[in-house]
Length: 355
Image 1 (spheres, rainbow, N blue to C red):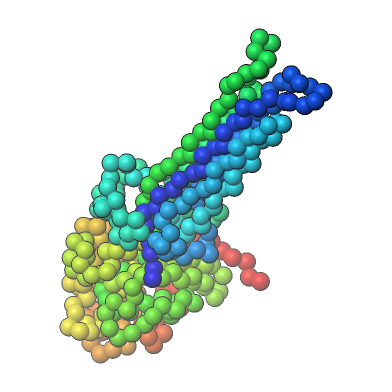
Image 2: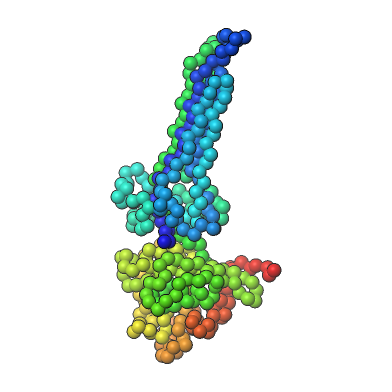
């Protein structure tokens, strides 16, 4: 099960207490203070790791705790510092802090669907780079032993410090996939088939709606100049997706970071669809979703051109439109290489030296 948002509770460890102790040995019956310091509590650290694909490991273990620091002991023996707890998260994870007054019922732990009011939540970190780390909660400072409080006028200090309390908090983690291009279309438009055709990704493909139940990423490499870029496929949209209808609205966050969008249209009009009306509805749903999706650059991929009536529908669709429209057949493989080159030429795509 793919999980792209989750609520967790994080509790860093408390610092260990300082020790109240005096040196007592046969040859030093009136030895001075020798209370050791307490150890530091463990931190809660999030680290971005490209080998982690989603947040499912936190859905089923939403409470993250670090150990407390060790207490100081006599003989100036300091308590051990607790180890940090490092939690691996996918690259592209956004961390929000939930205010204390928000009830668990509104953001249940392990919830998959975020609250619509998350735009008002403060963002504390956005892990967009591999190996980026963020200290979610810091452990408490270890308390000082009574050895720190001795002075010329106080040879037997009775003061010592208790360890500091570790930070605690409830956080909402949201994954936004990092990709150059995002595929947008209605169910059965051929998005997953297209992703399989242009990349090594192998999403599930079947002849029924909502075969894709989560985002899929594919890496595309051109065969001439070894340029690479990534393409994200999300579940198909339906009319009213911005109101929670269908599945696509759950995953639109995964194309928010894309440089451009690829509208995949069933130009053959399968299942009685009208490509022009599909395009209008897709644009409308992106606009209603907000977050600038309707302002992104885009091109139109006219899919299923190997089927009857596709050519005439494409001619009618092009009338009066000056957008980039690329006819292909993802199933037959027609036009795939041209599409890959078109995407590679679109903006800065890093080159990779051939081996």
